[in-house]
Image (cartoon, one colour):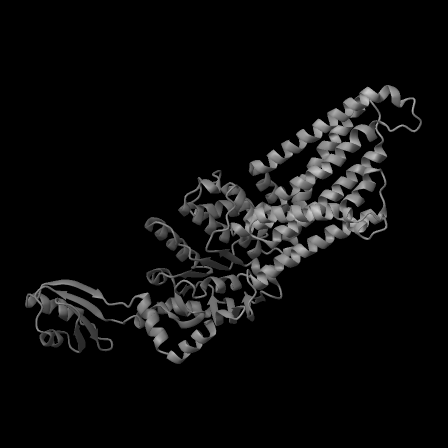
Length: 328
Length: 247
């Protein structure tokens, strides 16, 4: 972890956005969002629906002009030199921009040509992305006849055919079955090794599974920005949920796992919040076996996304009031 | 890049039955008119020799086909232009073009060139029909050329206007109806006046096309169509750019 962080810290910045804001009339969709991405990094934009994830991504890809702020891709300003900057971005919108009447090969060739892939290199690029996205036998199929999962793969293939430095994926796993989700996640992880990837999602475990860093958006503002380790810490650190069939008195339990705070959450369930850097798991398991407590559940107590939001937004009520004022 | 976009557009057009249906329907109508005019020429051919300065084969058999073509295309071009931008918006495929390193000008010109390509095909088929008369007669090539140029300019104006209206909405059908309304308005705007000097005659598509049908290629008519085409192409670019700004 430490090693990977030092390598990312030394690699070049591929995408930087400085205080992006976007208003629709008087409504503020995104306010003052800044982000910076280095090569080899996967950044997750996390937030509930309507938090401004899609608007942010549209601004990063030049689909939407920001009301204020600036975006630079590999040092090229997106507003001053849009075509040069856009050539280095691959974008998969929430709804994949697929022409259903074209065949997969035709469509990917078109995407390549539009992104200025030269004709001699196009065949090779086509074969490469089809291989990467699991589409090698689908070249002659009409896009309209493909399943949702395959259409999503064509969408991803479209976004990487020109070998971009920055890949921006808007909710890439929505509507896929668990197997397809696993494949797409593996693909994103692989892409993130030598490029920069931004993906948006409203699924917290997804961010933890594939991202290096996370920014949580809420009502158009960044309310949390940290590494995945930081997010896990924030979500409840090392708290544990424990289920015991023959629960002892709460004091006995507290003594067995001390130093830690113990709360009873159900007839046979407890929540342990250990003090810093103390892992009570081993002592707990040993005590449970020795004294026949009937341990049947032991899991990290992580806050859900909703709880994280409640926590993040309640921590600054003044700010929230200000947002509400701007939204209404 | 313009031709990449135009090529894709033509491919999409011919992937749907609409383009084929329109093409087939147009050809059926034109061939019907053409044959009836040729037939008419054959019946009156004997008398024509006795009339001084009589109209020739081109005037009687070919020019009316171009006249009908202008009306039929006025009604069918909206069906072809309606989907240019509106459908891309509706299916959200416009994002592919918007995020590609392609300027708005290239997108709009690509779409316009595709329409011109299709309309050139329609024109070419009419021209081939006219040229088939060479098998048994003589043609007035000057008059024929004026008609071809006139119809091409007229339909190019249709394409530019249709493209712009398609940029205004995300519903192809709305675009088609609006486009037809604009065409009809411009076509018959001079009906409102009986005064031949009225400025309304200057904006009428029909008036400008008529002089081509009579074999006159006038600079004013060329300028009129050129201005119309350029204006609506530029407006389309502006409108598409505004999408990015306002969404």
